[in-house]
Length: 172
Image 1 (cartoon, rainbow, N blue to C red):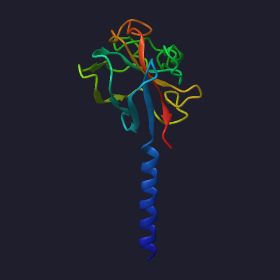
Image 2 (cartoon, rainbow, N blue to C red):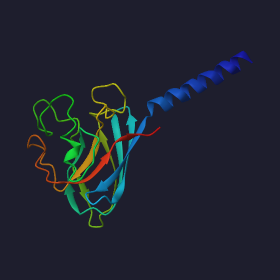
Image 3 (cartoon, rainbow, N blue to C red):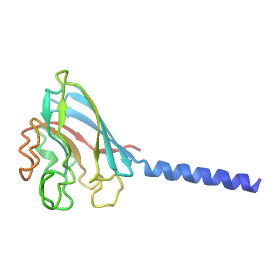
Image 4 (cartoon, rainbow, N blue to C red):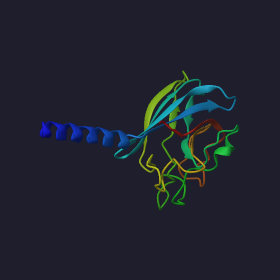
């Protein structure tokens, strides 16, 4: 009976540890007119944060996708600040000291305007208290731009207007 109780306690501890490690967040994605264009679900993994995007009604083509430094999405979304950059690095994949934590691959929106994709960002975390955590006092946001990121122009990749924004919020 004691062994069984110990095994049950160990199993519960393992489940609670797993639940704690599998933190999630979400962002309701809106366009500049305030229309809902989808959802982003963020999940902490061993190699960074997976951002699962389910989007609709977007203009087709290649679009920049970034984590921005402020959790505000007031059109034209400049309220979201610059790219999330806790290490004060230069922009782009080719930057000598590495890219901003908020730099991510461009998205290719098909002619249908609908996109379901997973993007992994290895430079951010959902772990509160860490310098690269998306949960900071002023918050953070996900932003999609009108044009592709050129991955070299500092500070923002010459990506054009911000057309979609969503504040990252913890799922409790």
